[in-house]
Amino acid sequence: MSRFERVQKEIPRQLYHLVNGLVITWATLQWGRPVGAVLLALSGLGLWLSLRYREREVPYLEPLLRLLDRPEDRNRLPGKGAILYGAAVGTTVLLFPSLAAAGGVAALAAGDSASTVVGRAFGEHPLPWNARLSIEGSSAFAAAAFLLSMLFLPVGYALLSAVAGALIETIPWRVDDNISIPLGVALLLRLVGMGG
Image (tube, rainbow, N blue to C red; front, side, top):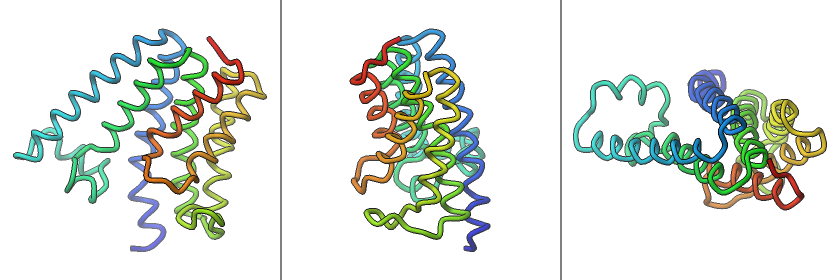
């Protein structure tokens, strides 16, 4: 598969990822912790549907999974990315004050989407500590996360959350970045005094 084809296959997933994150960031700033409870409930429903889908196909899920799921996830746990995303973001929103949680969600939404698309399209310089990722992708993460976070965080906090999110994504551990980024960024923002 060519680089262009890989990027083209990733765009619908990343747009979904971004739009979801934008809506959740806005909702968190408006309503706070109840948004986290709703997301955890939706993740539980998603897990139930996924397990049911493994037993037999659920017709209305098939087009969505074909568009948004990675093939390796469909074989193990259909909708895995969305389930983890909802559970991790929901937990972040429940655990942290609104501004800190929104900073974590925004870093994941904008940063992770940008790093995936830019990294796959233009990534030529691997990171020394994680060759799977590129300097180009990580730079795109930081830039996109900063731009989104600036809409509701003071500039210094927005920059901190963007750089922290980009660095967390590059750590070569087995924790899914849908979990580590929102929780890690929200925790850091809370530790440096961001409430809300």
